[in-house]
Image (cartoon, rainbow, N blue to C red; front, side):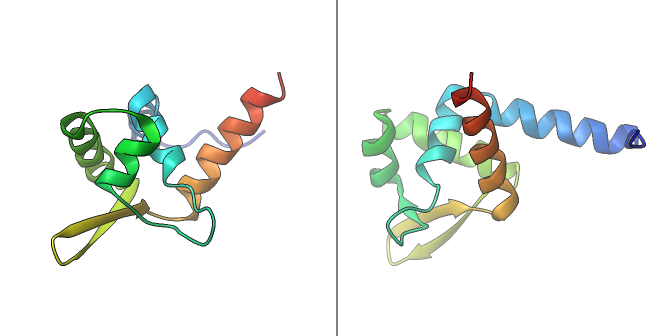
Length: 102
């Protein structure tokens, strides 16, 4: 049996899963999965993908960014968002596959 991680690690895992458990944030994370060669999206692209208001999307992007699940880069006046790393991509992919096999 695997050794149980420290309380600090367990707390960080719980926080990450809690942040990802919100339906709007899950939609945003799913929207940011790389597709058709693109791995970045602007706020307006995300709004179109998930059908939410600009203020809701902006707020949830801030939460995801603060949790280090997504990153951003600025190009002129536009900000583009992307999944922070392959671990976030795998987390979303594995949860999706798990749910779909039921």
